[in-house]
Each structure stands twice: as C-alpha cells, then as structure tokens.
Image (cartoon, rainbow, N blue to C red):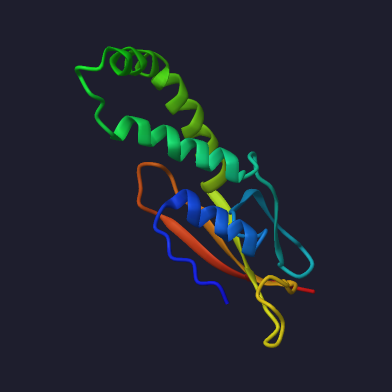
Length: 148
C-alpha cells in the first residue's frame, strides 16, 4: 500500500480526487419538505464545485500572500497588473465560493470491508451544512441518511 505524506493543499486535493469522486462539497438550493412524510429534499445549488477552480483560487491567493522582490522591476510590474484586477477577481471568486459552500452537502461513502478503498459503495449518508445570515455565527449541520 502506498503511503502519501503531503501537506500542500493542491497535492492533497488531487490525491483525494483519485480516491473518491464524491470528496468535493455539493451545492444545495432550497429545502423542500414533503407533505406526506416530512422528508426533506434539496434542489441543486447555484454552483458546481470544481477541483480545477478551487486549485486556481488557491494558487491565485498564494500570489498575494508572498512578498515580491522590490528590486525586481518585472515582479513589481506583474504585481501592479495583478492588483489592478484583484478586486474584480476577489468578488468573482467569493461569489463562486459562497454559491458552493453556503448551503452544501458532504457525501459520506460506505466501503465494503474486503474491497479495495477505491471501489466505492453507495453513499450511505451526508452531512448537510447550512450557514445562517452573514452577520451571525449560525451554522446548521444536519446528518442525512440515504432513504433507499
């Protein structure tokens, strides 16, 4: 069995994507309560979580977290260009991340004891995460079971 030891988020996320296609959050829309049995269902959310986009956001944020060499004219010029477009990019990416994460489900997978870890069984449960209004610290976590 191969052991993977890495602390870089981009590498960890890529490894997770090879283990489970269900590792990214699933954006949720409105909750619909069934009148007959009270079962709660959710519509699809406004955004689709995409690994490449998360990695691109991470890499872009890293460009702002590291100081550039003030004596390197090329780096200073690149920084000025990035800063000129940064507000628009931050607004775009924040809207995307909020669309994916504000109300989302994290799928739990059930593995069969004797099967290889990459052979997925049917999702058994999910954790539904719902953030409250921005001005509060409210977070609702619901454990959902597969009805089937």
